[in-house]
Structure formats: structure tokens, C-alpha cells
Image 1 (cartoon, one colour):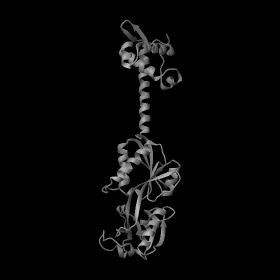
Image 2 (image 1 turned 180 degrees about the vertical axis):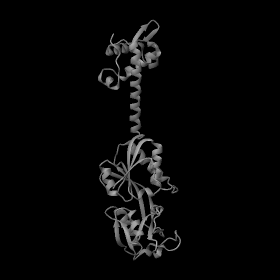
Image 3 (image 1 turned 90 degrees about the vertical axis):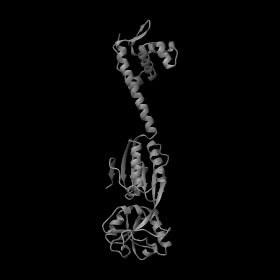
Image 4 (image 1 turned 90 degrees about the horizontal axis):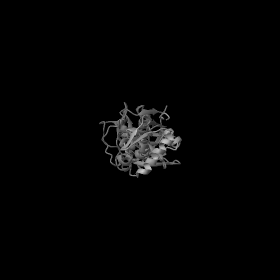
Length: 335
């Protein structure tokens, strides 16, 4: 009789053996009786006996020793049983992993964001909640400008992206999350910055004649146009002294006294020497959207789960969480 063979998933795939043959054999070995094994498997005894004999022929070894009151394993059968159980466990693990991946419960996701997005507490809240809900998903963070993130999404190097300006790009879909008011960022010595740190709201028309520092239009026409339109509705056309590629960059120029800016309210959480924030009066003030962009029809289960969680979080959002980015994820910042 030939020595027992070691088996693996690869060996099974390269022979006529099927996983069901291994399951049949394991049950027969556990029951030590063909009839009881057949009952447990929900099949007739003769076909099961034939399957066992066919398995022995395929392997070229005797696995079972037939006895009047049942069967017992040969030495080859005992060796084969251990390998059969290992192969079945490996197959079950593979199936479970595939199903988890399809459901978005494991895998990878690259989350992009513009420099101002993480200051809104919704963004870290969503990332934290996603990591807690799906610990098997490896989350990577990627910071970039809106145009960079759009290109990365189209190139499939980023899976979802938090942005501040509407995106109209082929193959991408935008999921609006919320709109937040914009506030005035003023140099500390400015006349309109005098008084209490959280002084009374300003009328937008009070900014007429001031020099504005704006997020450049080609990087984000939505925000730029909203600010210009709001100023014109207030009765003046703003004087734009500087345009910057990042919203947060405006604060450095404001601190340097080069002008004032309108920024998302959440940026007021970033305390910077030389900058004072003031709210705006009325309902006509411009707002800054927070949007989540993804590829249209992306089949990734992790992306579906992330989008679903983000939309639910935005719907239920209450601004009571400090905007701290979770630290245990891998983060890459573009130079």
C-alpha cells in the first residue's frame, strides 16, 4: 500500500477530488460508521460508500478498514484526516474572507481630504466610527488639493475624498454632507477685530473696501463664486488682493496683515496668533459645503460602507466633538 499523501487546496484543485469528498471522509471518520455518517450528511449509505472507495482509488491508499460494526481509520487514514480538516478549515476561511470583503468588512480604503476638511468635527468622527465598525479594513489617509484628489480618484489611488468645493468630473459622483457658515478671519489689529474675542456678528457690507484673501478660483470655483456673489448681494464687489491654493493658507496671510478672508466656521477652531474670527449677520452669508466624492459605480464593499456611514453621520450630526484626527491610521501628506 502506498504511503499517505499530504493534501492542500492546490492538490485538490489539480485532481478530480472535490471539497465535498473531504467533508464526506471527515464525517465518516468522526462517526466510524458509514450508515450513521450518511444520515448525518443527509444522503443514502450506498453512494457514500462508493464515494469513499473512489477517494481511496484517487489517492492510491487505503483510508478505511471495514469492520462488521463500522469502519476504522488506517494509519494513512489518520494522516489524511488531519490534512483534510486543515484543507476544509482553509477553504472555510477563504470563503468567509471573500464574503467579508464583499460586504466591505475587510480590505483597504484610501480616504482623501483637503486641508480644511478635517477641521470640521464630522470628518474625524466618520473616520473614527468607520475604523471602530470595521477593524479589519486598513484605512489610509491622503491629504491633497481638490484637483489632486479628483485626479487620484480617477486614477483609483484614492477611494473617497472629503472636499470643500463642488466637483464636476467624469466618472465621479458627489455626496453632499452638510453646509457650514463662513466666518470672517481678520488681522488682530484690524478695526473690525476690536472688542471681545467672540464679538458681535458683522454685517457683510461692513467689509466693503477691504482687501480679501480668497481660495483661488481654479482650485475651487464653488467657494470663490459663493463669496463673490454674497458680497455683491450685500452691495459691493470685493477687492481680491491674494488668491491661495489652500483654504488654510489664507490664515497665514491674514495673520501677516495682508487682508481678511472668509473661511469655513470650523477653521475658527485653529487658533492662530494674529487672527481674530467674527461671525456674519443674516441668512445671506456664504456657506462652505462639506462633500464626499467617490467613483461612480465603485463595486468596492468598503467604499459602500464608508459612504453609508458618512451619510448617516452627517444626517445625525451635532457639532459637539473636537476636531482631532484619529492617530492609529497610516497618514500620507503630499509635499
